[in-house]
Length: 311
Length: 173
Image (cartoon, rainbow over all chains, first blue to last red; front, side):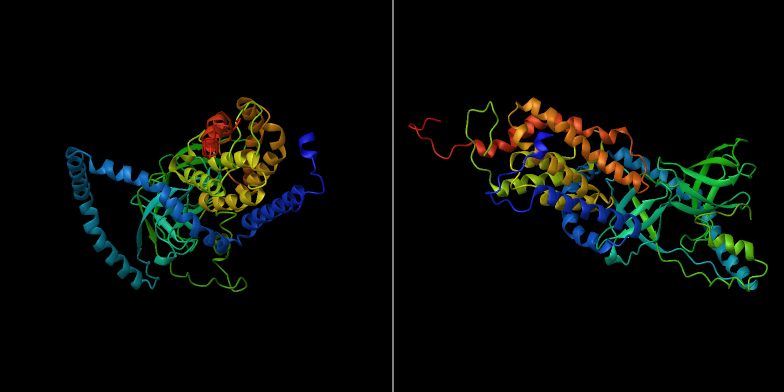
């Protein structure tokens, strides 16, 4: 390590010693790491730096976007014709459902009013274009072209035409970052459509999702569809999230291992929709006053860590 | 100005704007969508390492820290993850610079390789401690490619210093 021990002769003025500077920079870096990972205090610094890096990123992506657009331009008429036919057919096939949906929604609203139940909030939002996937290999995020200018806020859910894609986690002036539901430990409260069992689905980080802490004898089958349960106050209820692809029941463990695949084109590029902020849920009752619904309320409160086993 | 041991020519002094330009171009290359293919080198780390070896008085840990923060924001990674790795890289490179340049280019690349390997290891260490996902073996491969690119990179980045100012028939070299 002779190279590292070399010190310059004292008669050359060289500023602070390299080792002192190294210590300073390493200390600053480590404190930045801790501040960002544990406390998330650095969003303002990040937004300020993004003002510089964002134009560079746009510049770097310009040739790729140009190529993609050129490819689209030169796509054969046949392919477009086929796609048009397919879309028309899909539209026609979906038409009966859609036509009745309107009537069903009205009927649902009327019945809810009759029963004095709160109206369901209609879904609304804005369409955003996926710009690119974030280069960070340790997480799964995408960057979309709507930001603070378009009133996007952190925490808003993001969907595509098939289901839930993720959640907005960081907002910059012109773009925002969406953490995909497949990101490691990203949680979505869900409900099984077939029997209404509520649980929380977690991302695994490899493009799949997992239903954790379900008892080994839980009523979950391969092919079950999971939709958002709406218990979290973030996602509106009823959006498809994932489909169960594998259920492993091992007697050695008290929980079943349930692997699900996302329904939405989570890792695809295209257009997504950022849903509007959900109306605030009614205030939770005081613990002392809660009499009957107590266990359910409590479970809903702690759902992030310990999901509800059975309804 | 340091030249390699085998080099018989004296290089012109480096122009500061060329250093800045090469670092910005490296930043742009890092932001290309190809950057997350396995084995594509971290250009900023490579160019930073080059200038830290060549010009350790001009490019050092300050540049490394600023470029690291820029990469952190661009990559949407943890703040300070690239900064920490680049600062350590710059320190190691400047500490080795007095020795490395006496070797031919291929042996220089061999000495640079462990330094470059430090970068993904530090980043992965920081992220795994913070609860990240293991990125796969492909993430740790780029230092090999970067070390292989050391010789061509040296030739390219030293090109502006090779041109003589004026030809003088009476000058010995």
